[in-house]
Amino acid sequence: MATDAPGRRTFGLYVHWPFCEALCPYCNFNTRVGRNLDMDGWSRAFREVLHRHFRETEYVGCSSIYFGGGTPSMMNARVVGDVIEKVVEHWGLEMGAEITLEANPASSDSQRFAQYRASGVNRLSIGVQSLCDNSLRQLGRRHTASEARTAFDLATGSFENVSIDLIFGRQRQSLGEWIDELSEACSWGADHLSLYQLTVEPETPFGQRLRAGRLPGLPDDELASAMLSETAALCAGFGYGQYEVSNYARPGREGRHNLLYWRGGDYLGVGPGAHGRVSSGGERFATETELSPAAWQAAVNNSGTGESLRTRLDPTEQANEYLMTSIRLAEGTGIDRFIALGGSEFDRGTLDLLERNGLACVEDGRIRATASGMLVLNRIIAELIR
Image (cartoon, rainbow, N blue to C red; front, top):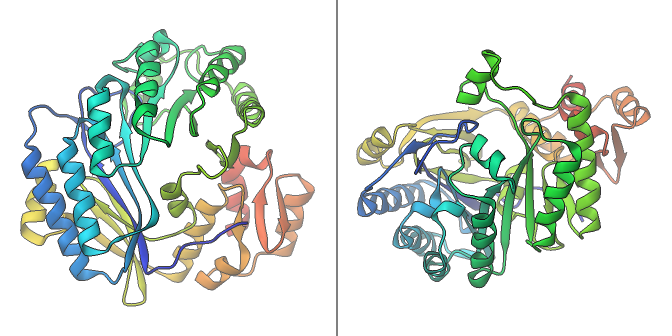
């Protein structure tokens, strides 16, 4: 059954760790190379931010925590434990709360995983990205396919819930090669798969290479569509349900924290470059934090949150945000909720046109993108908002 946003009295927490051992040329996240980091200082900063948010918010429980980056598996497990402990102290964790940490195979070992588990993490997301060593080198990854499998096996020794990420649509990757690679990954038996088509962002090294004509072999639209279609079919054969355009899970293992985003729930974003959506005094706000780790820590010392911007979202903006995220889900967009947030009634002619073209279906008070519609979500969103 589809479930719209959880009550605004609860929230999710996103903690951004901005450091990596090396920067990947396709990545456009807020990251930098970091070594010999002051873990005690980072623990103090995170705890101070959480304390300030506790004083300024009305939440009564935390439903999920997500440590993202960057490379959170570079963090000392004590820092991770300090964050979780502060959340418990201030708000408490809901029963069955999901606590995820992203891990890089290059910084993975059984002792580290056991320490994260002991600190309170109950879900690990491993950035495998590829099972082809040549592709891993092209992507700037510092691990091999064999090391990725080893990291997965080690993770399952400490965690019952393990997710892996893969990137397809890479340079000179054929449809058959992707099918073989994905089949192998599915055979591992992970609980969750995040499968992303390579996106070349303008400000990344890959973007610079593309503009200079030095990124050959990227798939055309026809091949990319075939890869998406085959991905859904193959995953279904292994028992993975597609609950979001790029995410597949075994029953009951859907990523709760990301579902919070897509369903329009509230979440605090802490750490350099983190974004959030918070409610206070009957209004909703989009928040951003300082990008530079040094600037963020200085802002924490001065104001306590590290925020660089807090923008009130009007009802129309809230409704459109909900549409743009929820339409990505297999459960689709709740029409009544969209209207309650401030959206206008959907044009019946537009809905009929989308249905006739096989891009969406309207039933049980929800708009759902079809398999064909999932390939052109931006078009659907533009039509619905217009």
